Length: 246
Image (cartoon, rainbow, N blue to C red; front, side, top):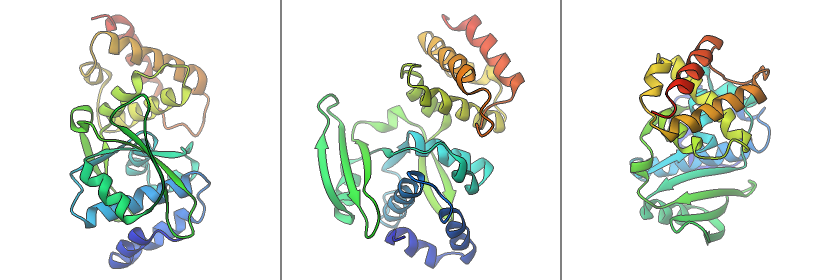
């Protein structure tokens, strides 16, 4: 595989990071292998360009980043997978990406004025799609810095990611799955259901309740799911049901 920016940074860093990267990526399934590779490659490129404060990764690969941060990079091997990168950033970020990769296509969204879809190609790699947002992403996402194989990746924090996913209909079950995963991340960090409840108001609580209920119904028996404990889920559902209109 050839992800030039990523592999240059790995070559300059600790040999242990390079060994762990190879160990994980040799066993990754598609689409995770390709799209996670691009995610880390782009992060390497932007970091080396001094632009690490001008973008954020959200969506599925931000969720995976939080999984890997807590449970280890090996967990990418059993993750659900996602076909594209959801990313937001400044116009400078967009220009730098387009200068550093071969761009097969770049189209504005017909429905969202601040969204573009890019398709990138790196040497000997498959095409990768990026849904790129150029609006005021710092209002929408509070960001965190996770490190994988020695590479810093800027991702939305779990609360921001839950907010963005809670507004999507529960019929899109992948988002309910991700919300449960993000709640598990928060539980691991020491958040209580009450702490989480404070971050949501009114209709947001009803939306979150719907995702938690639907996610547990659909995926509760998924042994690979990175979900909160039974007690945490039960308490959160009770509190959300009680206060969802407040």
